[in-house]
Image (cartoon, rainbow, N blue to C red; front, side):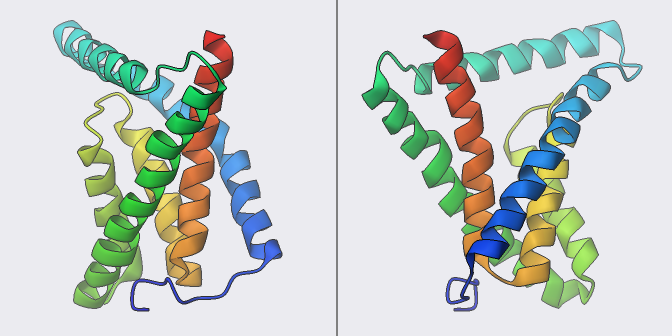
Length: 169
């Protein structure tokens, strides 16, 4: 109950959350491109890009989809399970705790978003994941309903898996 699992939701809330995720997606995606344009030292940028390539290779191993069954399995492993576990940990647990400690919900959202992004281990994707984390944190702050966060996070990850699936077939 304390994590937000007992809250009721309706179709309008789900629709709004999905619409916001859809509208914000191009902005979140463009933050990675903007990050690459920052005045990094050439060696630093090359190191960041190498790390991104390694990360992408790992994702491609997990998301190997040769058929529709593999696609469904990838949706489960890459979209649904991380949405449930990450939202429960970061928004339901950490953000909730920090909001009470700081007595400042926005500060809790920012700190949680920084940690959420850092845990993903992507240098060039840090700001885009931070923005996504902030958006998810804002949803949770405004609604207290972890299910809406799980749906939004799942939608984001499932969209990426779907793009991978259709681009590889």
